[in-house]
Every structure is written in structure tokens, then in C-alpha cells.
Length: 157
Length: 100
Image (cartoon, rainbow over all chains, first blue to last red; front, side):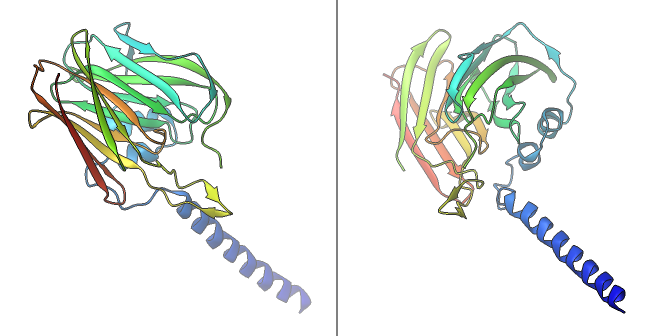
């Protein structure tokens, strides 16, 4: 009898713990109330390839020498890392910046409707990582990357 | 939340820099043990004389008080550049400036 109670108790406890975990996981996600056409799936992806696929539907990409990244290779504090990219690729219609080792790699994307291939921003980096730029030109994806070393991460509490 | 624009002449066009005072809270940071709800700018659009020329989609990894720049082509003195933004809580802001 004692054993039976123990089993029931364990079962109940485990079930409660699972529910708790699920709730915690749900709480950590960004709010679901999002602008209709904001690419939430890409922004919530947890690895580089998935994030690129979420944004552009494909993740096949080729390295390009026509993408110029302008960023310091060493950022002491990761919460405000300046990053500039420009490209001379013809017919560029989209540029996106990904920090590979952030929990969610996609930082921002820029859709061009007549503006030139240039995007500059300041971003948070959790730790030292390759920073990838993906450009879409003529329906194909091109990429370039630069490693940025971070001494103190910028995503913690 | 102030929004400011600066326009700089550059090779191949004019660089438009937008600076917005915004916390860009990730939703993962705590203050006094309580999570600060996520609050970040999702969309920022740049237009020249009323025509949209670039739209940025931003995530929580963009730094607080975002400074974003794009390069517009073919702008002339007296043209109007406008920046509009909206965040995940529905707040919006804008600023405009004439090309000098």
C-alpha cells in the first residue's frame, strides 16, 4: 500500500513539474501580439540556418566578395555593438544581419524598395560570435561574415 | 519617445540616420526579480517624398535607443525624408526632415 501511494504521488508530482516547465518555456518567448507582416518565425528561430530559411524560405547561399562589413573585431561590452554592411551586388532587395551564437540569431532585416544596399545598426551580442550578413539579389542569397569578440555579453539580466 | 533624423551626403546617395529613444526590452531581463515585459520596435520605414524606399524589421537584439541607417538614392535638396516606426505594443513614432 505504501508503495502504491508513493507511485501515485510520484506520477502527480512529475505531471505538475512538466506543466510548470511548459509554462516557463511559454513565458520566455516574446509576446505573440505581433505586427501582421513581421516575420516572427524567423526572429524566433534558434539557429542560423532556420532563421535564414524562416526569412527567405531557402537557406542555400554562396559567399560573396561584394559585401563589405564595417565593424570593430573586438567589442568590450556586447549590448551596443555597431555594425555596418554595404554591398555593390546588383538588384539587392533585402539585407539581414544574424549573430550566430545569440539565442535567436536574427537581429534585423532591411527590405529595399529603391534604397541602396546599405544597412547600419547597433546590436546586442550575448557572446563572441561570427556575425553573418545575408543579401538577396536576383532571387539568390549571398553571404559574408565577420567574427566579433565580446568580453562582456549584452543579453544577460 | 523622441525620434530624430540626420541626413549625411555620402558616396552614391544620402545616408539617413534614425535615432529613436526606445528601451528595446527583450522580455528576458529582470528588475527586482520580476521580468520586464518585452517591448521592442518591430518596423521602421524610410520614405522619400512620400514613397517608401526601405523597411526594416527589427528584433529584440537591436540595442536600446536604436540608431539605424539606410542609404537613399536620387534625393535632391528640398526633398522630404520621413521615418515611421511601430513597436510590439502598438506604439508609433515618426520624424521628418528636408534634405539640406
